[in-house]
Structures are given as structure tokens and as C-alpha cells.
Image (tube, rainbow, N blue to C red; front, side, top):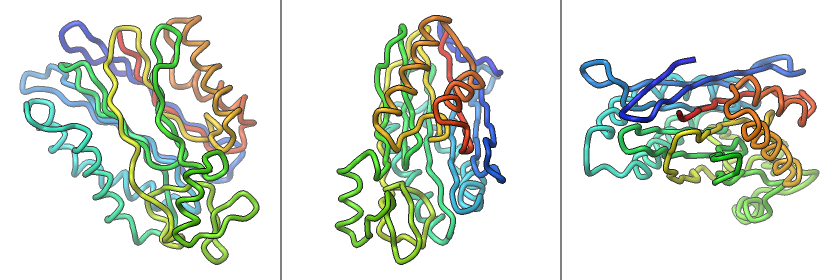
Length: 266
């Protein structure tokens, strides 16, 4: 665990990943801490990527992220930069740079600005980011999963994909996600992120989780998984990313790779 502080806020970052019953770990984690010239922490950038049909897209995008760090570092000290626009620009660049990958990945990220006491989050695909305060769910990103989100499914079908057996198909390649990075075999998929900003306060928690933790292919299971994690945070005050993953794997059956990043604000 790493502890960051700025004024009266502290941030405890924990990460955890489990392979589940899969033969290969295709999830990836990226974390970066920002410090000022004197070593005082300013914030962080974290992301989880849930790879599918291979690890190449998730791994390749993780390798691209360090190149974006100087821009985000500048945003922490600049007064006129829109953090949501900055994240949208990053997502657009990652889409362009990863378009040649046959494999694909989700992308869920959080850019935390401690001095402004806010987090800007982005999500592409069926991973999820959710914000917890005082034992209650404050907000969550949209899960871009064609099984649970009919609106998302129809957007991709209107672009030419075929919907059958719970998957969006282009020829013989199918996927549950309606949005992703990579996946050149399904050109009908969307790539725009769901972006939002949340104010941070002491005792808040911000959770980034793959669908091996929160089953976003079923709206009922998604709500139940989030509710259990929120309940545990309410009971214990703080938990770690390992707790989030183990709770999620119990709900999801442990069949998929499961990865989470948990930001505890103190």
C-alpha cells in the first residue's frame, strides 16, 4: 500500500489481481504517483485493463500510458485544463494506437487531483468504476456490456454487428463488450469513454473493478456485487483491493480473471 497526502486528504492505494480458473492472466494494472519538486504528493493516475482474446492489447496499452504522464502531471498545477477533456483525449489516442490489435481490452481509469479534492474517471467496456461514501453508493460508470445494456447493444447492431447467443458478432468473432480498445476483428464496436468527475472527501472509497469482480453482464448480479462491497465498506470503514476481489469472485464464481484497484480517502 502507498500513502499519499495533500493538505488534509490522504489516499491509500491498494491493488489486487487473481487469475481465477482461467489458464492465462489477461488483466493488467497501471499506477503512477505524482509528486511536486519537493516530493510532496499531488495525486495519482491508476487504470485497470481487462484483456480478452489474448493479453497483447492490455499489455500494449499499459506500455503506452507512461507517455501520457507528463501531460497529466502538468494538469495538476495548471489552472485552465479540463480534466475530463484530458481523459477523453487520452482515450482517443489509445484507441488510435491500439486499433491494430486482434485482441482487445476494457479500460477503466481514475485521475486523482488531491489539491482540488476530486477524481476524474473514465471507462470503456464492461469494467466499472464506483464511488462510495458513508456506506452508500454515490455514483458509478456505465457498464458497456451488450447483455445487460440494450441501448449499447443496439448501437453496435445498427453499425452492422450481429447479435446472437448473447454476443455481438462480426463474422465468426463475438464479444459481450459493446465498447473496447483493440478488437480490430469487430470494427462495429464503439470506443468512446464514459467520463465523470466526483468530489472526494475523507472516508470515501473509489473502486475500479473488472467484470471478474463485478458481473456487469447481468444487471441484477451487478447491483448485488456492488451492494456487497459497499456494505462491507460501511461495516469495516476501510477494506483493501484484495477484499474487493475476493468478495467479487465469490459472487461471480471465480471463473474469470479478477482485478481491482481501491482508493481509500482519509
